[in-house]
Length: 451
Image 1: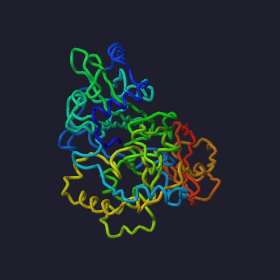
Image 2: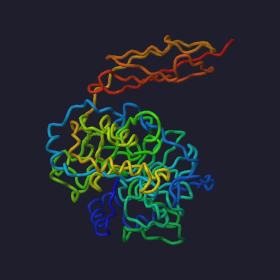
Image 3: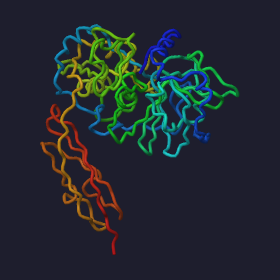
Image 4: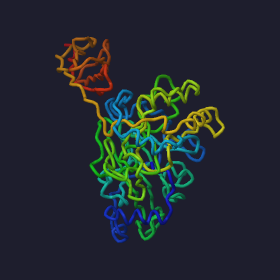
């Protein structure tokens, strides 16, 4: 999340530094993207930002966007400290936490169906580090209507800000995540200069972006080594955002959150797992940790005086921590743009403002850089076929693990499945989360039709 608005001179410096990832004016004008139909039948939404909400019927995101053993979902409450934790914290101890979410603030996101038509980008500033071979399901209304990107007052065809302008899209049928940085569309009839990138043009009906990233949320795949994304670290944005539904709903928050700092490590390592990329040299700092570092709110920090919603988030910062994903405003936690947050004076916004402004990074510690717990070995042999009408039991749901822990099956015991081939899933949570990660295993089960 690049939280600061870059000046024109800064953008020119970045383009010069990353020229290998850009195309010149002639190339931009010559490359024709594959044509795809545009879906103009998106239903009108009923809430979200007052300026312009994302398309589709509003629905809440699942609490966990990636597998249980994904880095966003790792419980790091007992993970070892980094040997330089005290040094890192000393360098940023005065940084006070703040937040970027609310009504007309934060990251808007939208959902689309699996068969939504896709567009293709003709070029990108970080072309060689973008997933350009796939299409992106950008709703037609997003081209000319406000509120679809972080540039909430601008549109894709007519942006007004050179800042983040992320666009986050979830394919709810295929569990795909698309994150686009600074999308732009030429809706004119002649080649058009790309806003904020002087001297670079795209033709009529063409799409351009700074970067475009794709993730299959059924996997734990990271970006190729050295690749960026919408965040400088090459990580995702949406899984680390604070969501209205998770802080107001029942149950704990079970994932890490993203945080930005105004600089990152000046000496190696510049980034650590799960990051795959480092920020430009102008953002280097001699006191900051590398991108991908995890900050954990100290277990000893008393949070009982804060409101219930803030307590839930702060407990997540103890259990799952903050992942340093980008350079930007010091101590900024990213979140979603959602009208339900209300204005600055709403009770829930005030609750978070009080709680977060009471914390500094001196209340945190840094987990061992790149720490990954061992994944237990889960053994689960494919069960013998069963006859239609028989309920699932321990005969089928009989996985074992190399360490102690608990198993949760899906479908659960007692479920009666129709005839056909089904995938059974087990999520194993080890008793010692400081040493072992959550593991997931699957098997196939055939249910035979009654004679």
